[in-house]
Amino acid sequence: MIKKAIRMKLHPGYEAEYEKRHRELWPELKEQLIAHGAKSYQIFLDPETLALFGYLEIEDETRWQQLAATEINQKWWHYMAELMETNSDDSPVTQELKEVFTL
Image (cartoon, rainbow, N blue to C red; front, side, top):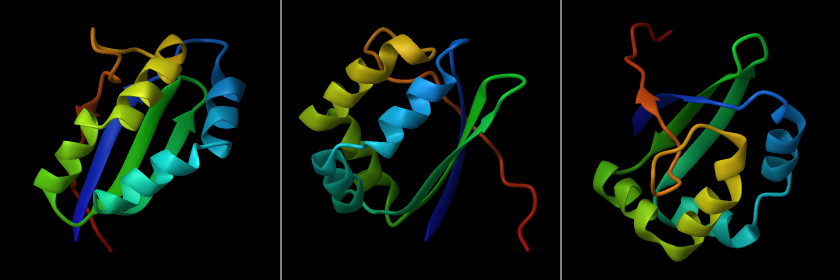
């Protein structure tokens, strides 16, 4: 199992909407996340800085990277773009975090 952690950034005032949209995650996106090897995926919000911290456990890095090209994933990126910092293709600006401790 591959463990990944990422940091993203939410725009001010969108905390409740971001959480709402994830509570209502589209079933077809959930299916694709699983199909591309996600075994676990959590996102945490630091309300003081609006930093989002994602933690994922995936089966295979190559398979996981292929999710980005799917139609449903790109539709989700576009849907979420107004809420957070994004790249020109609407993908979230992410920074991979280095694992420094495991219990």
